[in-house]
Length: 140
Image 1: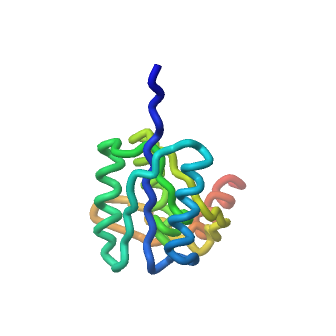
Image 2: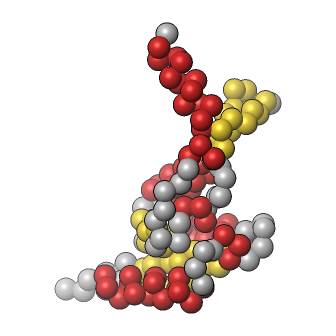
């Protein structure tokens, strides 16, 4: 019987990277080796527009890999928790497991979340505002 080895991809953005590139790549390689996975591809963005991120998301939707390694969730979006949650939902829908190589707590009070009360209007609230509103609503 032939077993199927999960394919692993690595995504990172050089602007928000806290570790050296070779260290991140080596850590992904070691993770694959320890778990007997195949290290298939590297997606690396260097600019502000993140074209490789969009390419990686399309590959994820096409199920080109089953596991995506990222240094941290801040690599997805550094200040908008809604974008991070949307990305995680896309990964789940594509049956891709996300592995954070350097998991760090994210201060959610510094993250933004956009609430859309009507399609033509947009209001920007941070998560602290939402938590305070929910606490006030639950006391009434």
